[in-house]
Image (cartoon, rainbow, N blue to C red; front, side):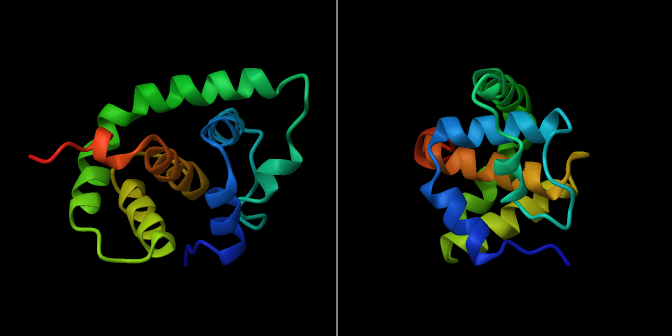
Length: 125
């Protein structure tokens, strides 16, 4: 069963958008954690020299993937009644059925959307 731990949620909540983009870049290039490490494993792969590259990879990936996932994320946002942690977890799980990505990538996509501002990304229809 896929779950977002409180530690992972706290890490996501305290991260900047750039940090989340870098973590997304790490994850989509195969430098992220395996399933047993949780999201905190992404931090161990950071290096000062390569970090700007991973941020740019994350920015590019998010820009590419957002049109494919925005319908699901925005629908979940418009029905939002949960805590942020539960909402991220449930929206990420919904993405797993939509596109072929891992759970860490799905959680990062949803978390980045929250940092960017779901009101702006998901206009009312």
